[in-house]
Length: 307
Ligand SMILES: NC(=O)c1ccc[n+]([C@@H]2O[C@H](COP(=O)([O-])OP(=O)(O)OC[C@H]3O[C@@H](n4cnc5c(N)ncnc54)[C@H](OP(=O)(O)O)[C@@H]3O)[C@@H](O)[C@H]2O)c1
Image (cartoon, rainbow, N blue to C red; front, side, top):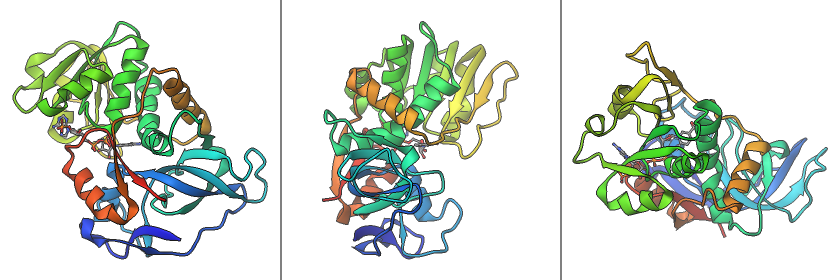
């Protein structure tokens, strides 16, 4: 099968497009013909060697995808060949930048006809992360105010819509070119982080959801009310240490299960959360997609059309 892979860590240029062996569905697994796979920031961090170094090559990246069931492994009875499905790979598994992937059936969900493969791939990990962060971790409530850092990104775009659906007031940060986009997603107040210091523009928030990391994450504590809570997904495996005793800091635990994917789809079908803006690439252009993602100033999601 065709795949995008790397043989050593490095910049986007180490990504190659070529043939790798087909995967086989094991016990409890599905083999899926991948039609679309998305780019996540974790992909280029993995490629660059920022996480634990890879020792087996060729290494195929890719954490979420959408396609059709091509074969069933032993013991799988909840899908049949030809079913449209989408999923987020299990923690520790990758391989969606490829024409086929084998994955545990229990963490796969049905793709509805109303959403395209590209839309499901774009919504998968971004939607799951937003859901776990806003609903499960922050437990955002109607009438609360939340600051969502990095509003134009894939996860934050889902989070803005989810927070509005809950009935919260949403303040977000974005560069001027993305203000119309985040307003369309539902943001009530937008701070141009390039010209304004967000700590001077907003205060006493009930919650913060930070998708930017670094200094932005650390400064975010200042805008919380006493008793407020903050969730961080771009500061590594744990939340940054809070400089305040009167607020709580969380690193959402984004597990994989079918139930959360079905909730994302229900929200999308009801119109509450629409897929982020999508920019499409052929898989043979993986290096260009990584360069774009790594630049960190595009809107929404980058998605590979696999076929
Ligand atoms: N399960 C997980 O834990 C999980 C899952 C997915 C992602 N993540 C992490 O979450 C982070 C966000 O990922 P993502 O894919 O949603 O988006 P992303 O690709 O990391 O971010 C892109 C967006 O960030 C905005 N941005 C960049 N610098 C900013 C700043 N200083 N202030 C405000 N906005 C800024 C850009 O908008 P402008 O052009 O307007 O600047 C751009 O639209 C990444 O670090 C990723 O690794 C974690």
